Length: 125
Picture 1 (cartoon, rainbow, N blue to C red):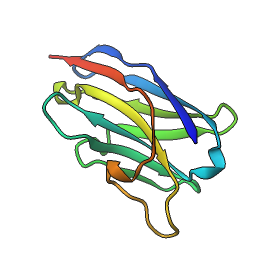
Picture 2 (picture 1 turned 180 degrees about the horizontal axis):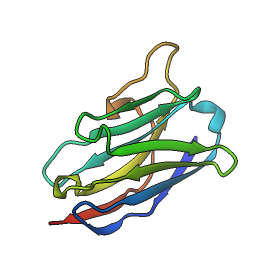
Picture 3 (picture 1 turned 120 degrees about the horizontal axis):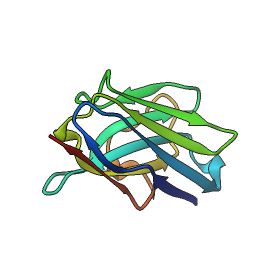
């Protein structure tokens, strides 16, 4: 089991930037994919960004070119750098992790077995 703890959320103006952090611990050998998902009120949880061991990344269409996922293995932390923020980026952001089979990385939240408690991001217009 992997434990995930997010931090870094807050209130930011349109066009601003914010960096989220996800500290992970536990049986980290049981995972090879870490990601960020978000959920706005009344909406389904959606993919923001995922990062697989080895460095391959995948982003949700609405954040491509604005958000960057990265990982610091020495600090056991995954980051989500968010730039050019828009009001529609307002949501609860969740860190997630799972063990993906070779050659496939899921974009579906249901495949991710480990989740953090979430951190709220609000972008004011």
